[in-house]
Image (cartoon, rainbow, N blue to C red; front, side, top):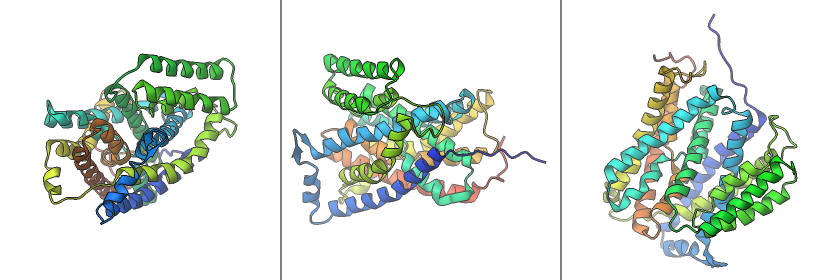
Length: 393
């Protein structure tokens, strides 16, 4: 009798999965609403709303630099949990999604670079490297029991690693002007928070939150995108190695942030950043080198990179597939990885700051590519998602 391995999902993971899938549906509604308003007679007024000055920064900047720092804090907390007690806690389990994430970033980046090398849009190389967790999990949720539990964990793991890669890219390549003094000060605050955690075991959240706000301000002034402070803060907050430990400050904060991020922060981000103007030349915009690099990178490069790197890693004996996953599942996961959306739009704003026409065309390409990847991924799993699919050798 064939042995069937099962994956038992923790309560924390299930809550995370439920909030992400619901967020994906709300994001779609907000995106459609933003596009309709932008192309309506009041479109100019709608776009001007996000340009209002609030305490020295445009409202759009408060959303993209401030609220999104909270989003990245949640991503960091989820990554911390995965490293301590989740899919990434054992190196054998972690290697497969790590390889998937590396392939899913490198191949799309190479595709975009090959089409945009030595052009003004070369800076968009990071756009097709991203994966939107909310939308990817939303598609998996619609498919229900057709999807093995370990595939949900695999997709979450490689998407979170993908987001971490995006943070590194933002910090390394999208820093316009660096202030060493402010950066050093931000790192000093982070080091102090780490000392409170590691040596003094301060378990109250308040000192970390105050330090996080200060670190965000210093990072904003340093020239490195302020959202990086969110990831740094996540790893400074104490975490209990006991899964679903209600007393862990990290667990409590992650649990608290799930709904505000899913149902407030990301929808506001979508409303502020998906106001895409669909002009008479929209088709020619999609034919530009930058647009083609984004579309091909997400729709073709993602599944190709994820599958290829996983196959090489398994063939080399570096890691192995979970017992209930087949290669067709990995291909499908790669297809869903092509849903860039939130992270791709976020990087677009950094890559082409000041060039509204390029940003608009890039966002249009991201939406088209994400819709295509989501639809193809959904149809793929409708056809091949059942666990009785034969393993491809």
